[in-house]
Image (tube, rainbow, N blue to C red; front, side, top):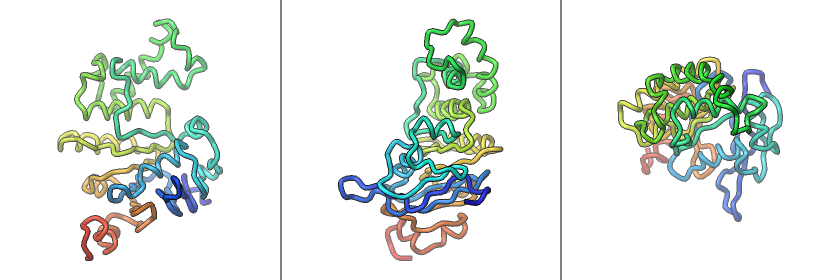
Length: 250
């Protein structure tokens, strides 16, 4: 495995009761890149994410992260190695403030990360770091806002801040712009570009204009298998990709 490849899969396969949701997927994610996983509904994109982050064990195939075989490792082991994901549905604590949400994530790196009865003074020690992370995603003005009261696009930015609090080397973003209006999409695109410095991002995304704007490389899935791979200009002209998306032969 080349040192410039941070994540690699070979023959990655997942079967559910005989149905192959993912079949023989080979991926190579270059260090420092923004790589998109795209495809029609039901193509297997989220299942691939679930396999990479160990929500499902693969039926066969291998996964390597930084040259280490993590195929049989647990979710916790993979996260500790620096591979952290977000989800399609915002996963923040809805009745905590933005600052408190980030502070909870920062606790994960401390020896008392599971001590939920820590004194307020001890928790306040993390406020400076938490505010810095909120500022990095343009949420400083929302620090005292309860998450449930934040606009949807801002909630997604908060989720990215809590992911950054875990100091990931590889961020997996599952549909980061799903359900957003044009203004929020632009804000989140700018945010992803900003936080991609010094880290690698693998994202599932349906919005092809976002993919075109952000991503260095794309992998297209169809029916659980890799259909095409390359940069946007190449992939978007592939007749097989056009047929998969438009439903007619190009």
